[in-house]
Length: 413
Image 1: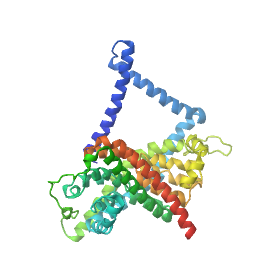
Image 2: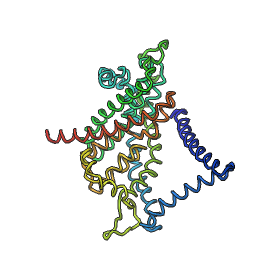
Image 3: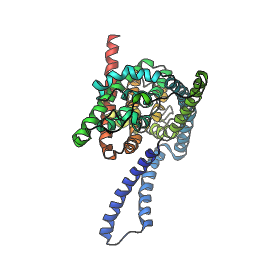
Image 4: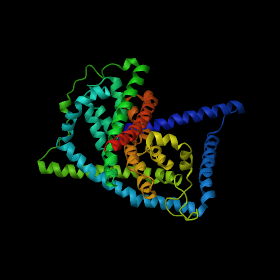
């Protein structure tokens, strides 16, 4: 991941720090004296401890402390063994296949086939198809590497280049998500979800372009009129004979897959564990807690069931617990797909839900954790809010499109 992505995350922390400092200034005005640094840090620590102990205290009050701690650790342990390593194996295999497709020109062939669709659907130059394929085969930041290539970005206007963050993110980790869902026996739903993700990508990209031009009409100019470059110079071919290229691509792609697999471990173990403990209830026959994996206090399920008529109409969800997937996908799609095996074991999932999960998972693919960094690396931090808004709309449209497309195809076939 580029260093600029880490800088952007630090910038988000800086923005939070400024808000805290503004609060402290108001306190100082009322006290009519400055606060010491240690006092400020103590105040922040005090607020954190209240929230921390309130959250885990409520869980412990409901489950009892020993069983809550055991469930917390057992859930993370089972996720690691049963889900993370499976996802990592998929990442390694798909990474190797993706590298082979790139090395031997299949990606450029697909680019040429998809090129005519870019302008009418996305209002982007044909070369943008390369960005969609690269993020589909890998992850969101792949689009930024291309966006900095003069042989690529010279074909874009500035507002179009900015919208690449939404366009590329809509296909992030697509191959891994589809392979994972297909491996669970839901290939039909996964393919319908891919179609839904395409709809979401169109909506997100178009809305982003419209919002950008409305706020900053001066961006309706080429990235650099004097910049020279040629898309034919974008080459992924390595040196050496055919067999050596094949072997190197296989191993390098697999190594890249290991990196993606390792990167999703914190998200799955931390985010998915908390989400599951707020989604599923006790495992005992009489409603008692046993301290085993996948127990918890189903607060999310309880709240979602209150308004599930909305989710059922929009996404076809039969259980409020399923809303946990889209919520998790906002931050990390790897963590989101880690929820699916448990949904299957609970018997609350079907092909329609898989279609919606695939569409939303691909389209959002953890954009809240990457969008700010991606736009900052392009030098357009001021558009982060618009990009997030547009992509939120696009992800919802992806899920809705996948559901109703599934309903339509079910009626026909």
